[in-house]
Length: 422
Image (cartoon, rainbow, N blue to C red):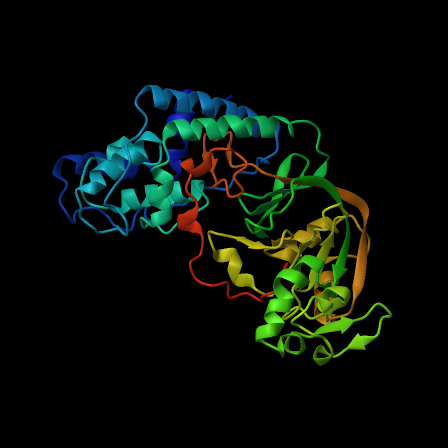
């Protein structure tokens, strides 16, 4: 069980050692502008828990976090922070004092760090911790997305926790000895075995207008070096407009056209200023550096027609905002993921997996025992170490509307990835 002390201060041990706490106490009186150590705590990070997101322990921790946040609300919650955009370590600004108080309320900063207007290494470490808890890049700099997350009122966060504890409760039973969780708002994949998380993977999930579905299924097969057949919705929404502007697009991306008889057509044979293309099948040749599914597809039969796969566009995994697909899920470090999936399937060692990637050969590996997979929508949860996580309600399923802003995290630049990626 979590103690109140753990909730309030337990995670601060990840940032403050007794020595740094003593230093903070000493500096609280003097607050000399450059007397702080600007490197000591600046790179501190939250340790990854091995507790699965879908577990009785996570459920219990989340229920207790609701009680803790209600206590925060009863004490007046927190005040919005203003005038802190762009601040980073070394800056001096009166607004930093209010920022310190905001971070102290949620346990991201030890009160012993003082009330200085200096954005010192302790503030930077606390901001990194706050960012990590909200799915933001832990830069330690006050970005607009960080400010937006800090300014969500405590009562909204309480409601978010209450909504999500119901979701967690529905998955608190036996999910299987080995299973996979895809948390869509967190754009995160977990593999779980014997009640412990074995691997975590950043993911790319469905756009706001092409959402990844909430579902339960089974991973049955891994398709190496797959063809990609363009879904009908993408032909209509994306491919036809693309070909109107770039007639060589299909040829350059090795996408072939086949009619109902299986005969290959040339792009010049299709009238791209009509709906003629919707009558044909479009298939992209294998090739991990170009094919939209990369080197591998993970087959999970379901009524939504979605699946998991590799991607040639690895850059998305470093972004805060990874709602980029047409519903399917792209997986970072996909070789580690499929190695775990195939660990009980004879003949599929890591060496064999790597060799199959390299060969370019179309190969299917059927799991000897299908693995349960859960695509869920959880925007708030806590872990037994007293850490609480929040994510944007990107699909507005929490029903809180604009109370939790997401606009600051939507890329303003055009998507530079391959146009047709699913």
